Image (cartoon, rainbow, N blue to C red):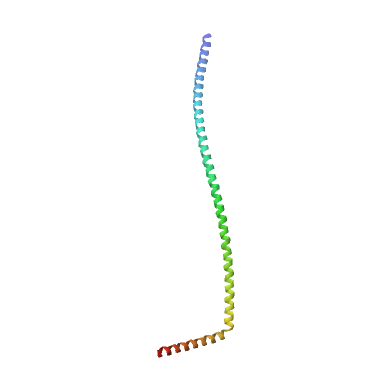
Length: 140
């Protein structure tokens, strides 16, 4: 019976030894894994710092570009306002020309018979002058 106790103690000791060896292997693998995780996190941290720096630079460039676009937009608005003023001036000038044209047309329509007479007399005078020149050229 005592032999059984020794055998049981020996089995327990062997089982405990196997358990300790297994735990040592697990702990060594865990240590190696944790080292890899630490290295990965350090690498990730440096990459995030680089990304943060680049993002800050990009954001600064974007802000400068937005400010430049804002200024150019203001200048373009001023140009559009100026062109609008020119359009108003041209429109007023066109209205003035239309009024003058309407006035001349009204006067010409009211005096169309006199205008016809003046044109006839003008034609007769030009013909007489041409005949007189022709006679002078013949005498020379």
